[in-house]
Image (cartoon, rainbow, N blue to C red; front, side):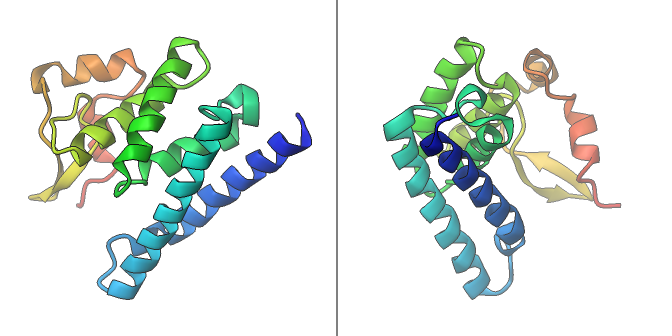
Length: 168
């Protein structure tokens, strides 16, 4: 791994750590905390855009497994930067076709981007809210095929997935 790529891998990993540590602020009652989250994710989204300009999609072959997953997380959370999400989606689709990125992660990014565009999601990975203690997904294109489509990309059935988040 060249020095530049090693530095890039460390930078992506550091951004994911910062993202994880501040994610609790995303839905805070404190507007200052929400703004801190938005600022962080926007800055990370901008940087991911620069990385994609220079390297294309940061695959595990390029930056290692942990940093590649970090790049995906940054794209997932670039919710107010649809251009970044769409570009990441396109580059990640190519990487999945070449066998160098995760179809599961691509499915989550596809759903996230569709929801952010105001469209129906495919895999039911994005949760709109909680009703009667159970997570409710944003609308899906084919809800009757959701679990079948999820299985194709290695995502557990919807009921198992939401059981992790259920409020008891």
